Image (cartoon, rainbow, N blue to C red; front, side, top):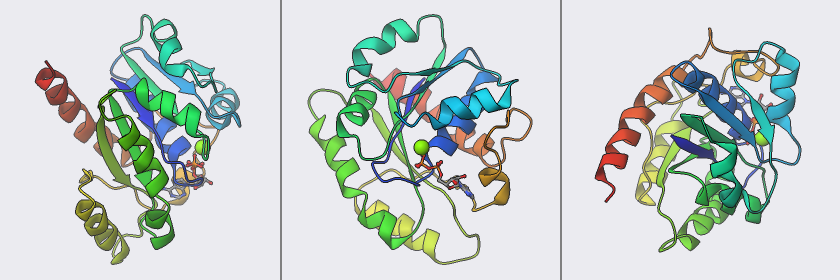
Length: 205
Ligand SMILES: Nc1ncnc2c1ncn2[C@@H]1O[C@H](COP(=O)(O)OP(=O)(O)O)[C@@H](O)[C@H]1O
Ligand SMILES: [Mg+2]
């Protein structure tokens, strides 16, 4: 699986999602995490951890799609974390992916700021068509906001994962930790993502 985690808005949960899912995928097969954010948060997360279970490389470059084959050689899975606001890098990371996962907190402001990310994906039409899925993150369980956000996203014609990631201290405190023993709800996210990925691969000509 080549999974790009993208949302041009900052603070959407990209790095958290990329690191958790990369840890989860690393339990299934050789996985590489590519940090395409010039700020290097995923890389420093792994360096802080010390016993991080997979390699992380920094590649905040606009031609990532051309470099990824070489970087990913010998890996079963590649996860790419992307920066906020950097269209060219995010675009090339989308081109490199078979699956683009968009993490979105269920707030009106985050939904309102989704348009540039969707436009970037729309611009790829005809060139590359990865599977696109939205993941609600920082969800306050028992509030109406996640249901409302889900409805808005579905109305936009987007594919929204059934699994959701709650607003939890443990995720915010995950930075600098190796997560293989505590994947939290990201275990459910991966369980939903992998079969969908396999089906979409079979469906491709
Ligand atoms: N599910 C969650 N619950 C609580 N805090 C979270 C959760 N996901 C992310 N965070 C926190 O929210 C902030 C932004 O998340 P981050 O993954 O860095 O977003 P991005 O990479 O999109 O900028 C970070 O401080 C992170 O620790
Ligand atoms: Mg980030």
